[in-house]
Amino acid sequence: MIRPIAANPQKAAQKEGIIASMKFAVVVNEGPYQHQAADTAFNFSRAVLERGHQIDRVFFYHDGVNAATRLAVPPQDDRDITRKWSQLADEHGLDLVVCVAAAQRRGIIDADERRRHGKDADNIAPGFRISGLGQLIETAIDADRVVVFGD
Amino acid sequence: MSTGGSSSEQNSKRFLCVNRRAPHGTIYALESLEVVLAATAFEQRVTVLFLDDGVFQLVKNQNTDALGVKNFSPTYKALEMYEVERVVVERESLDRRGISEDDLIIPVDVLAEDEISELFESHDILLNF
Amino acid sequence: MALLHTVNKSPFERNALDSCLRHARKGSAILFIEDGVYALVQGAEYTDKVEQAASRFSLYALEPDLDARGIPPERLIDGVQLVDYHGFVELAVSHDRVQSWL
Image (cartoon, rainbow over all chains, first blue to last red; front, side):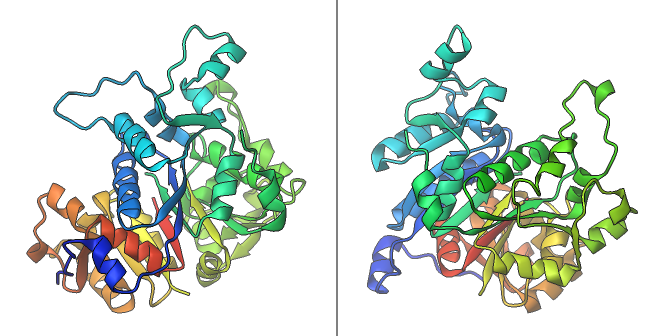
């Protein structure tokens, strides 16, 4: 049984006398390419925005922090997950937060962390910022819906 | 940079942290514990649920010396001190794995399958790792 | 109170589906995504179990994940509604919470 998919879902939603716009917290627990969760999270987030809802924050945890490296060079004929997130964040003013503890374990570093830990480089991609687990707790509290993508 | 402290005092929500994986084979057990501690630090009402292989996280006498990895199991003893509201283990998950409450490192609430179902409805925020 | 449950792993690989079915309450929705969609194929070991589930829960499949895996709709058990990512969002909106069985 197939459910009809509206050609212009946002217009359809508006016609239906809309559901009030909801705030989503998206949690990404797996890294790009290794697990599909990384793509599902992105595709879901983009659909949230296309439907006129908001994303309060995208929080990257466990290997999810690996989405935030700007040093990845994926094959040209395939998607660049990091770049997709950076672009979506730029277009919609998204807050992409990478957990500091998980990032430290996995080598995702910004300029502050580089200085703080005496590293010879930093690698964080545009649009992402490193912060604490409090940001996960806060967005879970503030959002209407929390959706976790993992493996 | 926002620390998020101000909103948490007005809004205390019920978090259910769902653990379904064994310790050490993957990092989920350790890093989910860090989330639990963060939630309590932000004065949220936290229930930690151990389900399926998650019950193995609480087994006593874990010794990781020969692995050369950190043994974080003593941290479970701190859950009470951090004011986690409830630590719940599923009866069926224990039974299927041949372990009992006596094998566990801390006292827990043992609930049946249908009582566990209720937890998903009675908590505002469901976190899975 | 109606939950949206998601299952993203094949039942042949993980017990996520088993655990979901044991704990989901009648009337909730289950959305199969990623490798989870394999549970919905007819004529397999899990078919009976999932067909029974169809009488207690509303079952959905993320169509892009079926397409990616070469599973045409006619190979699925009866009673599964297909959604795209927009449909996934709307399921999350129209249910009280999302429980991700990983």
